[in-house]
Amino acid sequence: LDEETASHAWRLKVKALNKARKASGTINSQASGRFFTGVAEIGVANTQGLLRYMSFGAASFSLVITGDNHLSSFAKRCNSNISGINDEEVIEEAMRRASAVKTLPFYDPFEGSDSRPQRFDVIIHPYALRSWVEWLCMFGFNGLTVHEKQSFLSDKIGKLITCRNVTIHDNWAYPGFPAMPFDLEGASRKKAT
Image 1 (cartoon, rainbow, N blue to C red):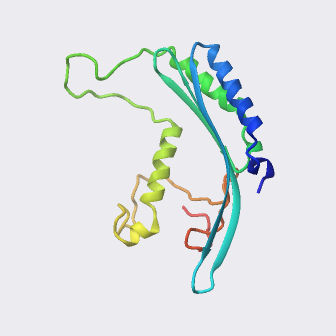
Image 2: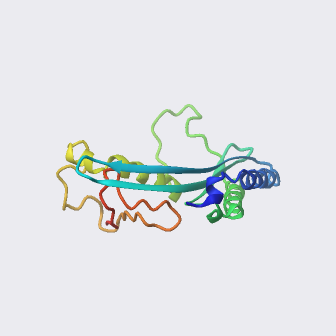
Image 3: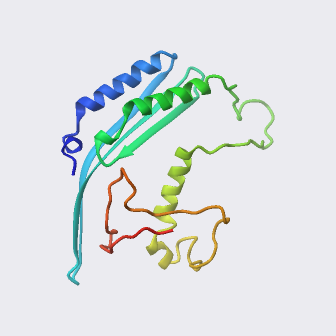
């Protein structure tokens, strides 16, 4: 457990958010951000003698830059301790995207008299895909929902469920994130594909 993260490091948060605010002003935009730090403990026990416990810290800095055309950009970093977050990197990424977005034409798909459905090409950013996969993992790949036949994966164990060029890894020891060596039932975790 990182003591700096546990102390909430409020000075580092205020400094980072103020830098973001000043940077957004240089391109006539608004900044809004969230710098979170926290510590948690988790314990699992049962009547069979299982007893598992751990404490961990977590930190994340997310930033949205919104321009006068109402288009926005986003950047985020997470780590198990606050010193692993480079606030300059987050600000630079969000500002780079915000500057690029300003060059795009604004198109309102709901404006106009044509009410027919329209088709759009879409590029899904990794941030958006991450959120989708996170929810998919929590509620679709969850062993209990599979067992209770509430998951789209029920009755599909051992079968191909995606195209062959998609591989999803579950690596509980991924660097920078709280490494929880057991699941919520106390079973030891291992890397899975």
